[in-house]
Image (cartoon, rainbow, N blue to C red; front, side, top):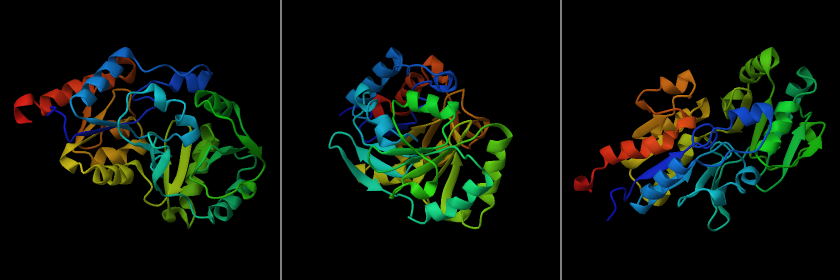
Amino acid sequence: MGRFDGVLLASDFDNTLVYTEDVLLSGGVLPPLSRENREAIEYFMAEGGIFSVATGRALPSFAPIAPTLPMNGPTILFNGAAIYDFARKEYMVTAFLPDDIRAKLAPVEEVFSGLTCEIYHEGSDIHILHPNELTRNHMRLTNSTAVELTSIMQVPTPISKVLFEETGQRGEALEQYVRSQPWAGEFEIVKSGKFFLEITAKGATKGGMIRRLAEHLHIRQENVCCVGDHLNDIPMLRFASHAFAPRNAVEAVRQTPGVQLLRDCREDAVAELVARLEEIYPPEKV
């Protein structure tokens, strides 16, 4: 019996497990998982814990990363639109967008001429509209390639998520416009980064999928631990009985009730988290 038997630890990837913000803004190579974080996760798993990643990344952009990480649990992808089992190479759960998402977003394209976005699917396909420098850096960061199209109406379905990449005042105006649409309540609309605005199916959040993953693994909610840094992580932090955030997290995450602050992501926050779990799960209570 290990001290972490029956415990699930789910971590966001970008800027929580590995700091990628600098690479996204300037281009470059994805940083590796630090030795301290790796050793801490391996220890957690050796003591019976289940470690999973809950990421906004799509299958094609996370597939090259998964084999480099110490993981023994399924992965939450697309910001909560799917659970994927890399060991079996198959989806466990999907919650993709309805086909009419293209018609609903067509007027957004008309208002914001040259709209920049990435559109993801269940497989390795990615389509992009009007890529900018941020898009190109994102493609390099995620080690992805994409087919460029001129309209969302050209994009095939099913669509797992839509990721807008507009910056500055135009990005703020886009978010306000999307949230003001009569259909906005039919979807999950969330900021997943400083410049990223995502649309997924209703209920397709990291929180909803963490709940389903815990149920699948027969793990009680009291033993669900989550860590994340951005707005898209708040649903799973609210579900977790033990919620954490690195010190570089956005203010809304830092102020989420019950969230415990860790060191900065660049200072091995997940390693500190595992040390905190040793206090929560001492050997004599196992």
